[in-house]
Length: 73
Length: 407
Picture 1 (spheres, chains in turn green, purple):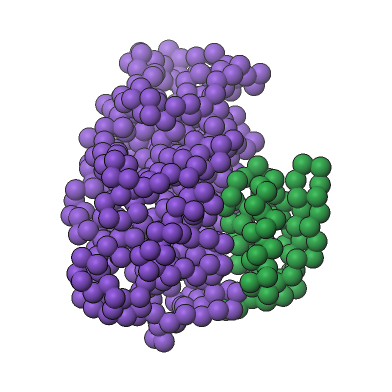
Picture 2 (tube, chains in turn red, purple; picture 1 turned 30 degrees about the vertical axis):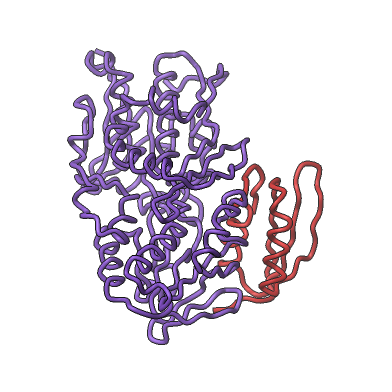
């Protein structure tokens, strides 16, 4: 999900849209420029039991990789 | 005589109606001399002030007070086609109507809005009341809460994105008001459910909402992406694996793009049109624009944004027709009225470059919200933007364009 250029709640909204359509084992890649994207995604992953695989600081944005390991009905 | 330039506006909501009227106003001479035609395609003759659904649901407002005949709202220079568009072919520059008739255009503005979609979540349609799909559905909420004397009410967001971002929070505040006025608040538990990390998605406004929810005893459950609902067990389940029991459920459904956009294959997976967030042009097309809820741009889906985007899109069309080559660029200004109960309201204010501000609720802002609602019908004429501009301040930039002329 490319959320670069969007402010909160853009990145987390895009993450949830991707999560809704994801299957267990999928990796969601979130690109964001909003500083809140990092902490919001970490908080959501901790609460939901999903895994942050990597948070990579690129030149002008952050790239967050989330592995979907938990998804209810 | 040369064939007139044809501008087609698809959709007769806030953005479409204003866009058609602005084109008619700004191209009046060209239309009267038959050099330009402006068509508005809209099958519905009734124009609804959709934010009014909140008052139908929680204040027993008569739905008739929030509707007008679309034909009365349009300038006489606009030729309204009273049927819906079935498909849009951006490459062929044609709109195919439900009757099968075709309408070729030189310039297109799509304002087809968003569609609340309770069917997207298993069980939601049967389990939950809502105030987004229609005035009839909103009316059901009022009738139900009159007879609700005790129990657990869950109110909140069932899916994102949705139109009018403050509306789920507003519903929680107005439910609290309702049960307090009836003297039964201590018998009713109110829980606000949201997929976001905080009671309001934008943190500065959440700092305003959170203490008010605490003060009023409205509990908040965050990171709850609704996966399904069991209407028989009265339980709601999150994709994250949590569940909650309820006695009354009032959830804002997830939204999608309009059928015509999905059918035409010009939207993303959810039917939102890829649109340049500044020029309002549909990506890859110089003569086609999208405004309002229909777009994928990262701003609130509200009437105010549709209004401001209509100004930008129509100015660009007029500029191109007149060969001025000026490019108008929307700056992402938002201004969402936000009712917080007890006769007070705030506004969610920001832009692409200015984060949302923390604005405390007041009675004056509530009066302003009510005044905006009454003023709504006049704003659709396009005659009052000088006044709105005084309030909104800068909403767009104008710069020279190097783009080629379409016609």
